[in-house]
Length: 253
Image (cartoon, rainbow, N blue to C red; front, side, top):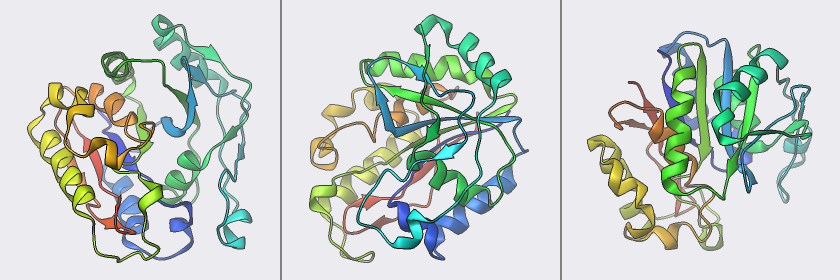
């Protein structure tokens, strides 16, 4: 069975420079067989109910501002697929999933995949993050997606911490206590597989300070549902810009 991943995607310009995040994500793909297709949820495509990207999608979105010119000129070949779109639609039919006319991939998708695969020859099926779902229903969505792990790689792209209002503009700035404490708490929860505590995420100390809005944390709840033991191994456990966690997780069972 192919692992499922929660990836803290960080700043989009991470892809432009040599760094440990790029190296770590590229090396990660060497640890499991190539999937037939990739199913990915990004915090940057939030909807009320559940949607799936058009099977004709083959473009990338530069859905950010204020970055280097090179980032807006970055090219990455990526495409969806009709056959696998239909398979995911059928798998998720109990959620009344809808086919979207969205035909391009946001940066929570393509920046992550470009660091994992220099040349991507695997179809990508992007499903939305349904903000209307409770924590329990997001978990159930993950449990339903788990059946696809025999041939697909499941990726959930978000961030363990995401308070952009309180960033310090230096990669190696001193880490703020609220970010460090919360980051370590999530790591411990997933090390022990404490499902109930994670689903009650808003009661975890410093949650609101790390997530003024919660869309970057919610993909982790779907990822949790794709595991049997609810345990995950942490990798890329670092915090940049004083409070932005790059900590990511791999669910192997």
